[in-house]
Image (cartoon, rainbow, N blue to C red; front, side, top):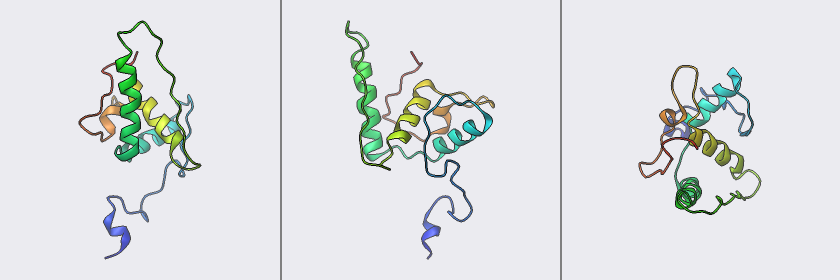
Length: 122
């Protein structure tokens, strides 16, 4: 058995749309949306990613009914640890980024059933 045979997508047949670098910006061009769709399709939301999303969204939901301002979020980690990728996925899922074919971010990403994403963006 070859290593590439254990992956869902054969690495020799599939190119990384983002070249391994997530860019968080307000780009709605066709290429940017194509890259975002790819990132959502290949997003693995478990481990520290799941814990990070849960921590951020739980804090937001806890503070909805209070008179306090929402707390800020600080994403920290080593170079290449996925900080920008987490921020980009959080943004796309939070706003439920729509695509031209009528599909939205939450339709594309394979999220754990316990993900506490808001029903609508505020």
